[in-house]
Length: 104
Image 1 (spheres, rainbow, N blue to C red):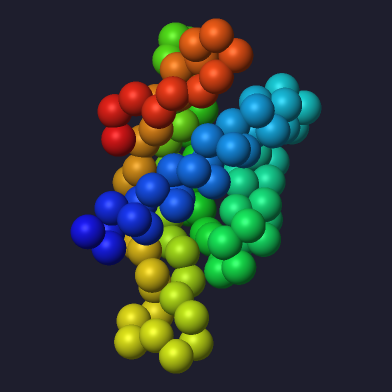
Image 2 (cartoon, rainbow, N blue to C red; image 1 turned 180 degrees about the vertical axis):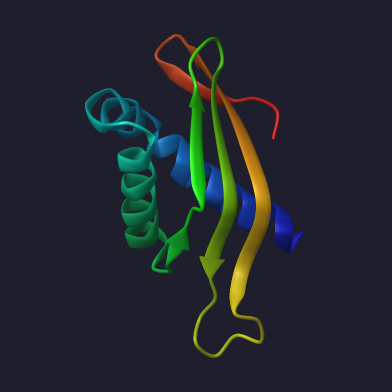
């Protein structure tokens, strides 16, 4: 249950940043979008977020794929990372001015 909650927080941050990510990709590519997601997500969660590599696949749905995703744990936590995954993919479906998260 806790893992679902953490994944939900991560997904919420990524979905909220999807529009900014698209603009950043158009302006400066995936590395700029990754830095934007890391900084905005870290500020939103109050924990450091690190992405090893971000790949954006344009189409319907828009797919964000990130490697080596890590969310730092609090200082008193028993593990160094609250969440760590080798690979995370998100499908973003844009329907009637809303974003729906597809397969996770």
